[in-house]
Length: 75
Image (tube, rainbow, N blue to C red; front, side, top):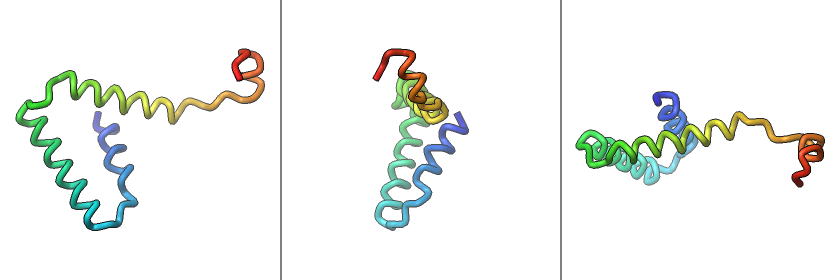
């Protein structure tokens, strides 16, 4: 979970606009407050982490080569 959250945080590292940074900080605080007050249920959090995990797996999966797609019959 920690690595997934770190990845979410580092995805925004190139943001330089002060208004956008302030908005991201406010959204992060609101998100944290919702989790701490348990306004977000377990399923909300589980779905968020499952989506992040799927995105990470898609990044690591190699794209099929021409021969792989040729032999599988998929375009």
